[in-house]
Image 1 (cartoon, rainbow, N blue to C red):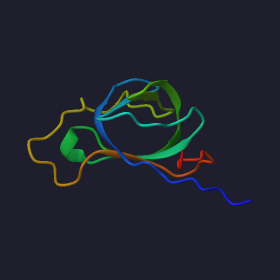
Image 2 (cartoon, rainbow, N blue to C red):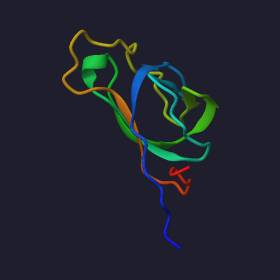
Image 3 (cartoon, helix red, strand yellow):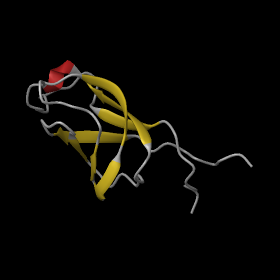
Length: 98
């Protein structure tokens, strides 16, 4: 039976500098632990990330990644971003129709 999974793209409002970065979204993400996501953070935000990672959900708007951002610069939202920082799920089996 095919999955009716529909990815929920969310904008990113923060990423910590850590061996396992914590990401904060601008609204409730609705993600589940174990989801594989693609994180896009253009260099306009100080750090630059274009990677896939599995996540551990820690709150409605936060999750821990497997990404080491220890060598990155601080995440700062630019005045006028050309491309928004965002996270996009790339796998899943959750019924999003409910």
